[in-house]
Length: 143
Image (tube, rainbow, N blue to C red):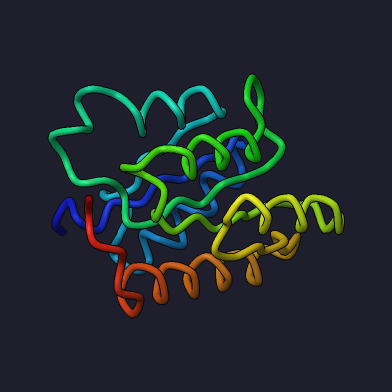
């Protein structure tokens, strides 16, 4: 699959990473997923000199509760940079706190989804996200 369909998964929970990878593998997308296990890794990936020569990911799935730099700060940095400001960012988190949703949308997330705790529901949600954002949605033009 082309690099244009790369997805960045920002998640620190190994079990949830494996479930997401399994769901995407069932859709034939696993080889195009970059994993960042904390906010610093996500920022380093998105703003590295090497990535400037490559297409940006077409979707970022972002957990909020991350080590080192939390997801809201990652989102803030994404939206404050001209190169990344229009990237689709879906917050995928266990938090259903109204304040987290308000902050996420205030900072410009495109969608806010609470992770289902049920295995089958989680896989279904991941597959629906992949289907919509990677095959149906038209990504923003690159700057």
